[in-house]
Image 1 (cartoon, helix red, strand yellow):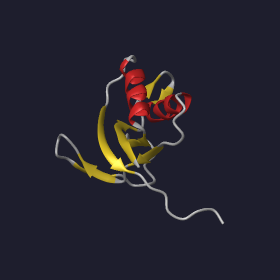
Image 2 (tube, rainbow, N blue to C red):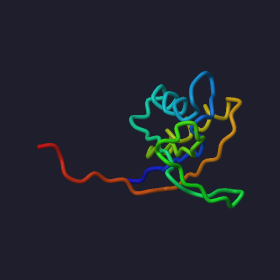
Image 3 (tube, one colour):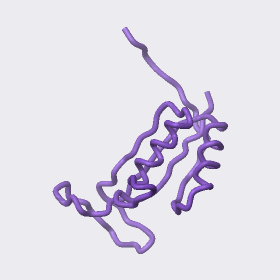
Image 4 (tube, helix red, strand yellow):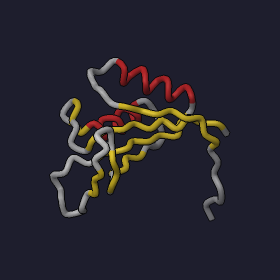
Length: 107
């Protein structure tokens, strides 16, 4: 079945409405009835300034990149993006059409 992969790019210490932005995105999506979402912390990468970074586990105060990802219907994506657009928040996102399947089952 076709779904939308909606992926937001933020930083671990970026805040919005007294929550970290990645937490706020997950809470908002849950309130909109979206069944699942994932926040993923980067362990290494480079960005717009071409600086390469590795983030040691023991450095807790590093502002690491965070990806928040949802695999949702087109309607859910529109609803989520519309809600985010009403907020005073800046972040980047990507949106891709994907095939979504489930394999196996509960025994």
